[in-house]
Image (cartoon, rainbow, N blue to C red):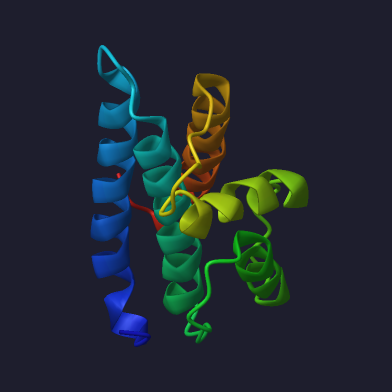
Length: 128
């Protein structure tokens, strides 16, 4: 990947992560670590898709604030707060290990941040 023609593939994968995050939260017993992980992955893929659509390369990183900064340098201003993106970035790694079980409110906040990135990116990319 990392070819300008691959941004739509990233959008498809981001949507899969979005669906998984929603499903993890809608369960009778929500799986918060999965919701947070997939919310982070959704936002990451959408930020990278926008960069690719603009013909920009990106590093293989999970730091959403850094990816958002790359978007800004390309003239793409999402308006998503750095703090929210940094909080969401945390879940890319930490939810994979023992002892990390986000609270339900943390999972909901993670999904809200991902939803904001998703909404902006889909409009920006012209995806319905």
